[in-house]
Length: 213
Image (cartoon, rainbow, N blue to C red; front, side):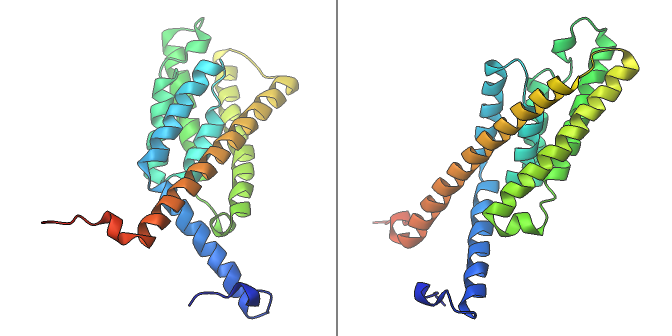
């Protein structure tokens, strides 16, 4: 039954309005999560980001992929980006041995898969509203960044390498957050476009029919 906007302020209609918003958000998220358009778009943005900056925002892409895509698509996107950007050879540490670089690449790939997996969990509050969706992005970014940089730090402490001071750590986290916000807004834009397109198709079913003579 359709809701009357004039009655949404009543105690009875308010829960219905909240439920309607939750259903609309869930449907919108599913539309984008199932779409290959956003999957390819995310990989394309990841490829462009590497050309714009020497530091690839790994955590931001792993988190956004995990939150906005179906789990199997999120893992596939993360693996493709990892393989495409120094995943197996870790090119930024060219002074290390080939074996060390290979182990470094595997460590980084494992860390990204863990971050992606955690992001796909999407607790109840993230599934119910757009605000909860952004809250989960922020939480996943904090957890994911600590896991990713923590595993990298442990690896290079064992094999001898670089360390991060607090200033560099903060700068990297700020950069990752900016990328996460930008990717989140891109996802929101794509979601609105896909939702509106599907709504127009459902409202005009005759346009989708093929008339056979």
